[in-house]
Every structure is written in C-alpha cells, then in structure tokens.
Image (cartoon, rainbow, N blue to C red; front, side, top):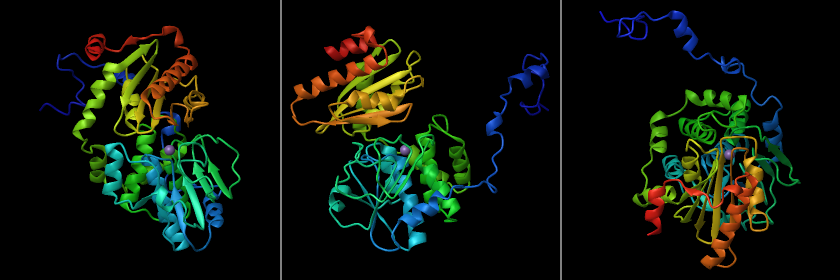
Length: 389
Ligand SMILES: [Mn+2]
C-alpha cells in the first residue's frame, strides 16, 4: 500500500524525511489570526448602528448613494443598507449611482443580484427625506451627487477629506472595506442576510482587500468569516469569472506595450479607454512586475482623464499622492496602497488632454522619487518599438 502521500514519511527517493525539518517548514498560524470566535463576537460594540438608525426619519423617501463608477464595496454597502433600513424602518430606500459599471465582475454582480439602481442625474433633484452615502463622502470629487443635496449620513473608510456638518458620520480609515462596517451593523441589529447579500458583502471584502491581504483590520477578518457559511459559491464564481467583451482584450497588449519603467515605478498611458475602471485593472496587473513597487495607469474616458495608482510599499500614502497629483486640475484620493483621481476636461481637444496627462505623470514621478529616471524605459523593448511603427 502506497499510503497517504501527506503522511508517508518517505520521499520517492526512499530517503527518510526528517520530521523536525517538516515541522520547521510548516507555516505557523499568526498569533492574532489563530482563532475566530464568531458566536460571542461583540459586533458594533459602540452602538454606531443604533445612532445611525436614530438619525434617519421613521418614514419617507430615503436615497442611498456612493462614488461614481461603483465597485463591489460600494454596491454591497448600498445593498446592506437597503436590507437594514427595510427591516428597521419599513421602507425600502432607492439606490442611485453616477457613472457606469465598467469591470465585467461589477456588471455581473449587479446583474446576478438584480440590483435595482437609478442614475443619480435622474433622482438628484427629487425631494429626499434622507440621503445616505456609503464608501464615499460628499464634495470629495468622486461623486456626482448634486452639490446642494443635504446628506444625512456618511459611512466610509476613506480618510476624511473635509469637515462634515452631517447628522451621522462613521468614517473608519483603518477598515479594509465599508462592507465590514455594514456586517457589524446587520449583526448588531440582528438583521439576517440572504445568500445573495452575503455573497455581495463577501465579494466586496474579498476584492477590496485582495483576499484579506491588503489594508485590513481584525474586523474585516471577523466579517469575512461570519459571512462564509452564507455565501452562494456558484454565484460568487459566476461573478469572479464573468465573461469579458472581446474588445477588452485589446487593453492588455496596449497597456503592456505602452508601460514604461522609471526605477521601481511603472507608468502607463493607456489612451482612450472604453470604461473608466480599465485604469484600475491595468494598475493592479502592472504592479505585479518583479521590480516594481508603484504603478500609475492613466487614460482618457469621454470628457475625463482618469488614473489609478497602486503601491506595494507603504512608505508613501497612495491617497495623499493621488490627491496631490490632481491639485489644480481635478480631484484624487484613496487609501494608503490604492488610490485614483479624475479630471473633468473643460476643453475637449486632445492636445489639452495630453498636456494635463504629462503634468500628472511628472507629478507622480516627482512624488515617488523616480523623476531622475526620466524618460524611463519600455517595459518590453521590442513591443514598444512595434507600437511606434
Ligand atoms: Mn471601499
């Protein structure tokens, strides 16, 4: 009998395996992640969800919104708020979003979950009894929320940009996802999630934190595992492996051909892009280059210039870098390792757009200390020559 290869203490060569070596190589669980007690976890110990619900009217029209071009965290947070408010206030808030759903995964999430949302331009001038922003803040430049619209509550994890004179504000920059805050709220308020909502929240935490690998705190881990048993894994699979339109594949060879290395940074000018979040996808992709710790991808979408930056090293704050890059042109911001910005073009000519992109790229290289490597070198030399032909 061959025995279980995992327990058989002889290698194929017949050489006995030293048990001490095996034990030394086995990864040890980290102290702070060893055991998760779900049942007796104290969800929302400060009672923030009680205060949140108290800040809302008992009846009337409630609007939920987030940043433009919503990501899974924005969508899942709105869904969780909808479930919470429906159960506690007996009214179903409407969700309104600006921009578009770009990434195939985000479109799949909204289609599979049948999320009913309105374009913000259509509902913006209606009278609302309460407006709630999740995963975003008013007047921070990444949302087309009408400026005069009074906001009742903000639940976010981006660092606070401006002082907010709003009845309820819960901003937790150390949280990996806003969805984690909403899991706490649902647990504390004993509002049950169905498998669709659980899948949306789980996917939000998973994608926003790169599988709990980026910018998380203990609460994110607690929420992730609290949701685990309720996840519809087939549904999750159909979101993660969503089919991509054929044209989308063009972005990758173009991105690789145009990417330039400046020391430990990679910069890519993607040109015209079909969806604004193409820059985020490419910035994540290029960051995997072995000699790169920072990536910037910039592109031109309709009347906007959009960019995403990603860091694997946290000696600089990506959110601060992204916002400094946009100064005088538009707005930028984000988290310590992932951030972005957007500039709405006043003149629509390409020359104008090109000049702004030059300035944004130079600022980035200056800020990350890589300007000395100007003009940089192509990521792949032959492909770059081909691109110029
Ligand atoms: Mn988020």
